[in-house]
Amino acid sequence: MSNSVPGSAGVIATARLIAAKDLRVERRSRVLLNQVLPFALIVMVMFAFALDSDAVLERVAPGLVWLATLFSVLVMVSRSFAVETGDGALDQLRSAGVPATGIFIGKMLALMVQLMVLVALLVGAAVVLYRAHFSWAGGVLLVTTATAATCGLAAVGTLYGGLAAGAKGRETLLPLLLLPVVAPVLIGATRATESAFGTNGIAISEGWPWLGLLVVFAVLFSVAGAVAFGPLLDE
Amino acid sequence: MNTSMSKHSPRDRVTGTPFTRGLGVVILAGITLLIILAIFVSPADVNQGESVRIMYAHVPGAWLAYLAFVVTGISSVAYLWKRTRSLTWDRIAGASAEVGVLFMGISLVTGSLWGRITWGTYWTWDARLTTTAFLFVTYIGYLAVRGLGGTHQQRARRSAVLALLAVLEIPLVHFSVQLWNTLHQEASVAGRGTDVEMDGLMLFTLFLGVVVFTLMYVWLVLHRQRSLALDDMLDDSGLDNALTARRAEAQGVAR
Amino acid sequence: MDDAGFIFASYVITFGLVGAYALGVIRRARKSSREVPRDERPWL
Image (cartoon, rainbow over all chains, first blue to last red; front, side, top):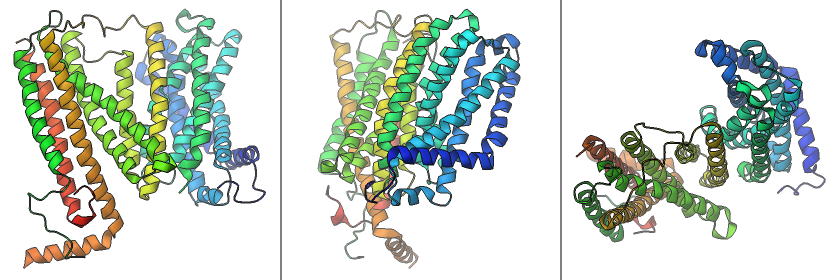
């Protein structure tokens, strides 16, 4: 299938093109900036209303950061594929012989970049709103955790987003499919972030095993996505 | 077209065959025997008391649910593998997942009833329980994806890939919940005070339960798979045929 | 018997739901089978 068009772009080149295209769409439309980021922030404020205690908030801040991230991922994945399926762009890409693996990696990278921006903002919000302690020593763990977690989330999001793309009722289906799968990311990223923040006096060194879990998850689902994305999109 | 279409009297076979009919009789007899043995004849447990009687329905149900998902996984591989590709595999996968969701839902309920008696709580964040809940939700999602529409082949391929992703997901969930539990909570209550000392009759009752549930599973999957096949044929024969038949039928009634 | 309610409830739920599901499958099959010719069914 993918070699049917002579001179069709390789996987890497396709990935780069698709990622650049998605980021350009975002730069022009500013959906992330004007809609998703404010949404995530208001979720953080709402958590404070619901939990109603500074001590509790400080204790659960890492979990709330990642919960807000998960909610936003759902919105962002829908958006990422609405761009493609709106005018049948995805089908046209496939029938033009563009390798599915390239499409997957490209969309995943674009989603990952946007997620990193989101997580950075949410960590900032946790420091300001929930009095989370940010230290430079924990910063390394925090950045690596965020990278691994967003990589895993982007891979799973792109994979399941592609699965539901174009189908009727996908807006309601995506959360049902996605949330059970990303539970390990929520567990791992929350625990690692707890040690990075030093919540409840947890040492930074305790966070590294959790980072291992996140890396395993990211690698497994990136590979699975790269392999499975083609069969999912094919007729 | 109309001449080949048989009118069904209620006794006419739709998804049943002599085999499934015989199987059904055996199952009904087995259920009766199981209930008599489990509730009235078998002894109470030394540790658990009478509550152990729930085990004979709960444990076989949970096992069969897991088996059902294994069958779904294997049938999905069989569909994806080109040499064995057939929509029958896809329908077996779908039927098995549906029965698995049913059995798992039932075991979650009976398990929490059992837990309420033995542990004093309906739920505990034990790795096995949590994984089971995730498995349940994952396969509900799988069934939802099967209902997305498209051609039969699209449905088959999509759901087969999804079933394999679930096989990848479940060990990860189990592992991470286990890690979460051991590091951040005291040992879970599951496994405490739940030792069952099985005597011969109890073992036999449990064994009977497994046999009865296995036979129920086979019966349900056979019928559901055939009813799915009927639905697919109905789709293939097209809406027009169905509409003509319906109209003819309605006129027949009106006359 | 202790906890008889819980025990009976478990069995009623188990076999009640399985029975309801089995009936539902048969009823749905009967409905769609009206439009499918009998000789197209490989299991008959």
